[in-house]
Image: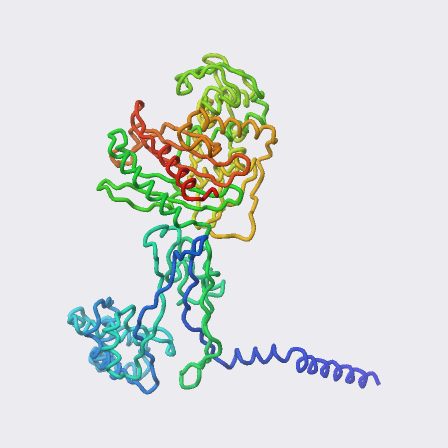
Length: 633
């Protein structure tokens, strides 16, 4: 009875298993069977989605290009292919051929190199004393350069034949890419059933080189990233975004490939059609972008008419929305010695500079958060003299200043005294100022919370932070407090001024439109202190150091900056010439900030007496344009 019961249980389990397969998992196992028995082939990458600006103007489009492809058939011999290559060679203009290809062609056209072997070697092979690999190696080694010294016409044949036999048997072989219509018609007039026209797409840029480095490029999967792409479901032959926006949003822009079944005769049966990729909208306003670039170029050209601007070659500017982190326009322009210009916008993510007093909003935050600044307390602007260090002063004597007027007039002395207080020391003439890395981190941690010295998480690849100074001294701590030690990128400066505008809320920076605003962190400074910083920033543009940077009625708030730096004047790798960086960062209006802007002008002058007003001119022109063109309506 026990045995019978066990058999009944086994029968029930087996029946249950079969029932489950037939009723519940039938489709699953049918799919597995198809995958094992059917050979599926995916078509080529379809047209990518377009990239458009915020108003729907096309920045990156697709244009059709004509290609001639060859489809192998089982009945075609190598001699047929050589004959076809000879017929087509007159249409070949570029024909890169390697020695390997030449040797393969030699063997193909010389009875597989039989004459390269001795009778004894052939006998040893027949007796299986030499392997096929050894025989092939002997042939290969005996092909001399003289034997494969082919004419240009023969090289064209070798090139075409190699194309006909590359890749999988069932794949289309591209013999001619992006050819003109006349040439394609002449080739098709040959009426060869193995040749056909295939129209594919390539990227088109209606605005030419504008924002090209930001938009990025498409191409083959980079060798160093093959494994990553394969793991992500791509095929080796796919066209992908390899830089910029094209790379970051490749999954959006990529279309869906057509799917085929490979049949017994190597023909392909279509299973599902391809689909074009999705369009991508950016936050960029292309009209504002064009105006910003034109302004930078014209001001760079004017600056170079002044002898003091001999080392002033590049400049950056970013315009955006502080409430969202969206970038409306972003430009980096390089002035070449011959008077031409080059787009270097992408280096706004990697090139870093000492930004100067523009960072004092963050510096004041350190003072408030540590108790080193007493609200409303006035001190007489002067100089700080540390032991064995030259005196450090404001750009001029500013009289009595408090936490607000110190921002308005850009008092270095006020920030020096604040920095000394953060170390629990009290300033006196010629004092020693012992400091630790913790004193530096007190500043750096707050600066990072604003975006200075931190990744902005902009939706572009290869962002870098600026340089963090490694040396520790009291003098350098004072430099750090006024933006003359650590360096920051233009995008970091942009995020910083946005964080000020948002009262301490640091937002991710976006080039492409996003569904949500991402908050990276909050500074943690009380609103009452932000009231003081914002009032100081307001006074900067209304009677302070930036009084003529924008129209008074725009209610602009911000900060200017200058920083001493050094420049490699003769490109020998040694910085040898003292120069000045000039910066400005601002936003408006005060009550509900709609726009923010930064301008960075590295090495703008090598003179202590004259600086071309580049940052002022750019800021004024752009803000006037925003006002006159209806952006503020």
